[in-house]
Image 1 (tube, rainbow, N blue to C red):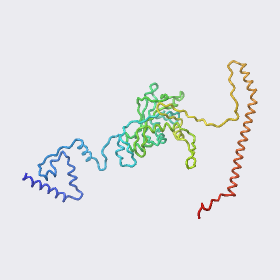
Image 2 (image 1 turned 135 degrees about the horizontal axis):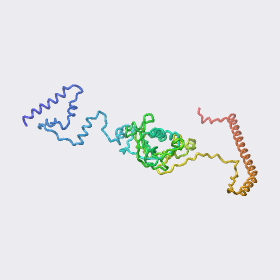
Image 3 (image 1 turned 90 degrees about the horizontal axis):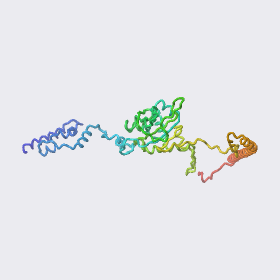
Image 4 (image 1 turned 135 degrees about the vertical axis):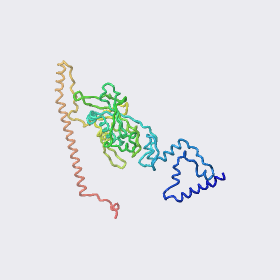
Length: 387
């Protein structure tokens, strides 16, 4: 032990001299730290204490794996994470990314759609992947959700008896395939849809087999299901799939007529209903949650009373083969037709006179208002105007 002490001190002195004469920017500590633990024979502390050379105890397998990954990773790179939470972990310090926690990559919610618009049915006959991309792009504009989050189950044109033979289409830029950032900012120009046959039972409220016209053999209506993938948490994409599905079903069944709203400020707004945007993007299309019937849109507009037909009732249809009943009904109609026509003419005259009086009243009121504002303009109080 006494013979080994001078040798140990000499080694320590050589280490300090080497650190003093190395070139600037060259770190002995950096070189020493790169020696794997399982290759070291001693340490500086052991030499100073005069201990003989010996290998340190091997580290735990988990700690060794983490250390090797940290050494192999480039500067500034984060350690690997699972695919389901990669977008959240890599962007923990980015204010544009919301931490959504660990997520399982699967379809979160489903809703149904049916359409008779030729813009969709014709494209479906030409390309199933093309109509999937078109539908996803329009759903993006309707919901403000990246189009890569939408997947579709389309009816298979070759399936004539088995409705479970469907075609599944999903984006090539979804988060599972391309990562969170590329998924978030996918557009119709940089995205394609891949489709493949699949066995799937749709919870459709209407038959999912294609309805074709006998003349041109083209699909006249198209019913399909839409699946919504989880949110990426990037750039404001935080809406859960269930919220997206319920929002589509709600706006698809909302009114199209403009809505007048009186605000607390005393001002009015007169804007179109939320259904206008949806039906502008999806003409002839309805949406519903699974198991809910598609609601029929009422496109009729009430035009008010019809003065010319006031008080009239349709003539009852006589029994077939009863000439006597038909003759009596015809005679009864001719007996009352003059009275009905006279009453209708009277009502029309009264309505016309009322409308003319309303027009004249508005004209007189406008003339009086214009004259008063011209010759007697409003002068505010000088105390309100100031110097």
